[in-house]
Image (tube, rainbow, N blue to C red; front, side, top):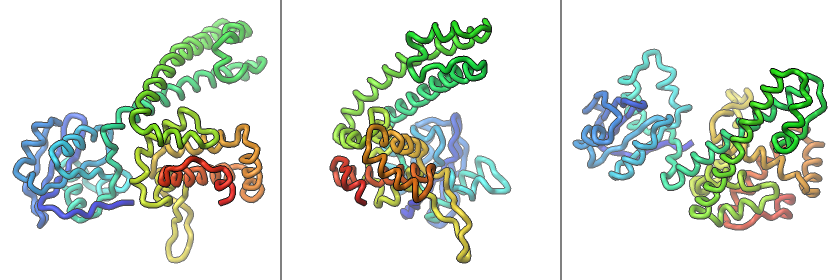
Length: 348
């Protein structure tokens, strides 16, 4: 985890909300020079920090509405530090907690050099990443509908329906006709209608995202898709969630960010298990887990490698090891700007 150690004349903690923000500004000696509640407005913020702009660092917690403040600070050459929410136990675990106290604690932690930094995703690629995440949300909703259709057939002990898109295509009306109860048929018809709405929407989003990806990092996307099993969606997810591989100094940092490793928890020489399972990027964890499964499709060499892992570590852990290995391979592919090498992957 990276901590911010920059030295400044003034340190500003911002307890940020959707409509209001509480600002606390400290000088280099820790004395409060500004402490007030403001509306979430660009001009209000700039006016409040104007007397301290010559050497100021601003810190806000990583919540859903930090984009505008980070972009405003970048536009006016103000140092902005995004605090990782899961590392702010000094705030979340306090006995007394309110906006005034939280803003002061952020400023104190920033001045003391103990703010754990979250990544400030650049605005150039940020909208496309958010659109990709929204597409994933719709795809999961569609998958829930298809799962409900299949579960309904199991519930009434009816013949097993086909998988995937075949349910809602030509087979859809025929499948619904098999159900004897009128209310159940109407429920399945509603699911199919929603699926038919989601399909063109998801396809249009994918076209838009692919078009934008060719403007952002086409070579990186092409390298990612040389990995067996990495298609359009997994490649785009990896591209936009990683953003740039240069922000990870080592492969260990990258694996930790992707939630592909379990950090050890120990004390006094005793191992107490693992911790930090929720710290990292959940989308990259999902992408590499999916990539490990897709890697095995129509890939005899990969299947033989997985069999060896399975004999040593068991079924579930073998897939986790394969996902972690794909993560390491991805790091070095992007770092060294070379395509995937199956011989090297299976040899290491």
